[in-house]
Image 1 (cartoon, rainbow, N blue to C red):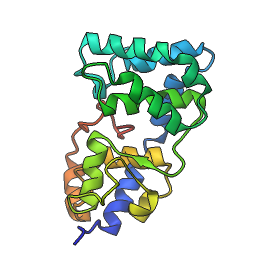
Image 2: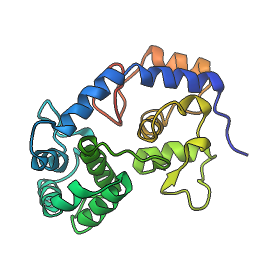
Image 3: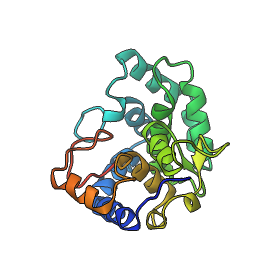
Image 4: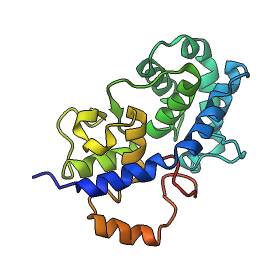
Length: 211
């Protein structure tokens, strides 16, 4: 039997995520690097370097060699990435390019593809891509195990209704950021948030802006 996600809990999470929209828009603009050559987009994505000059928390454990490998891998396929017509195509290109880079796993590849797509204007239309913390959140929605064939992605129709107003990227973000909150009752969630700690999935911020 699948665990229950309380209706009010899902609404609270959606409202909390919605409150971070402005911060997420600023972050998206940084990755898009409008006015700069496409090579700068690839450089930022490869280095996982945020606007404050620090490495994104998702990639904080990557070695210098891994980061250098990611930068070189993206530069090598720059023309193909710029001409890619869909998010899926960008994601596949980056995954393949990162395969020889030791330490650059599925999260590094997804994040790089997502950041590059901020410039290209591509979003996943139908699939919520799963990786790392997002997969943990999805598993909790399904009682600890994902349906067969869904280990890499699920559909918006499979998540609580309160989350469906967001893009597939937004839902991916929610499943990662709030993975430890999804199965709490509304009262448990309020009690937890009364002494809220920064999310382990992103940089310390209030409200929590991104995974």
